[in-house]
Amino acid sequence: MFFRNNSGPVFRTLLGGTLNRAAAEDATAEAFARAFAHWDTVAAHPNPRAWVLRVAWNCYRSSWRKWESRWSADPLEATPFASEPWSDPELVAVIRALPQCQREVITLVGLGELTPTQAARVLGKPAGTVRSLLFQARVALHQALDEPTDPKEDDD
Image (cartoon, rainbow, N blue to C red; front, side):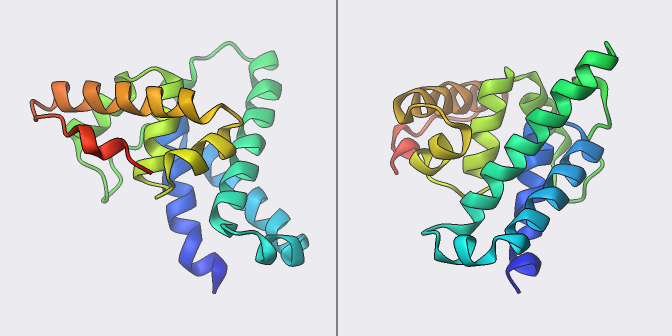
């Protein structure tokens, strides 16, 4: 049941943050395999989905470092996700244009449904840094989509 309820959001979060479908699929699968292997620990965690997201991000980063050392291709060119039924092409284009750190934060909070504090734990960054990146990403999204910015969005 945990996998069924959480694999989609975890995959979408990774896909939004990595812009690489194959890497997102691999990292998601590996994270859930590790969750299954350590289910007693995961089940006792206050936010099991956050645990899986952190493992998935770490799996992606680890695999990317290995891949990067062998190839020089741009990861942003790898498997676009604009064809996903849950995505708006205009929004996808704006998210693609964000710096990697802002894209990771906005996808963890927006798609991964984590609070900024939880996203900070997943990324291993200070909560203040994540809040700042989230604010910057939201301002960029609102400006690019020509929408007003709501300052209350950044509350935990």
